[in-house]
Image (cartoon, rainbow, N blue to C red; front, top):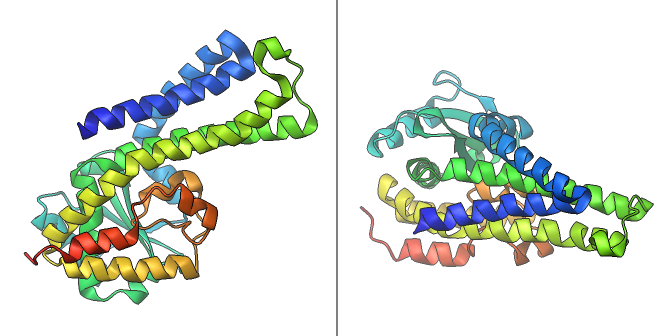
Length: 281
């Protein structure tokens, strides 16, 4: 059921991209947008992990460079019956983490410098096990494709916004709504993309929390980590691209009031409550 739901939602993102293309270019625009969506999905499958890692200036580390982190990831991966993922560190003070990659054999776990500073060993194990669960459930490919498509939609919505500001449209009302249509598109397209991303992400976070607690054997550790990360994201929100927000363990934009309305993550309080209701394994 989860797979069907996700497929429908990814199809909705593609359809939204085609709708925008149709507005700008009529039937030809729909065809171009469809081809563009296929190319972007193909590109997202092969290269989205590299794009996202570069976006956050993440650097791969070896066992020699980060022995404690590397050893912890390797032990948890063995416990989860997963191949050893690559390990990256993001030069960012805001504590957070995400997983990416097209499958479990090409997976990456990335953590910020900030998260390594504020979490104890049990809490960090819980976070890493959460991310490994995303890998085991193949969530990161879906998240990467959704981020790529949503990013394209937001880029085209920005184009519509500038076209509305500078009057770069001459279409008749019968053909597409003219300036009013552009304004509506600039507002509604990114909103729709965010809502679709939210629907894709929320149920998967609960599953990753549960799986992470079972892999690490320390649900209270993950609960404590979420508590710390929630407070930190309010105090020092990350300068993150909204189209990638759903990939992080906690919403990196949660310091912004408007983003809370369309958060890609379930409420942290609910996640913590569920984890504290679990027995240590």
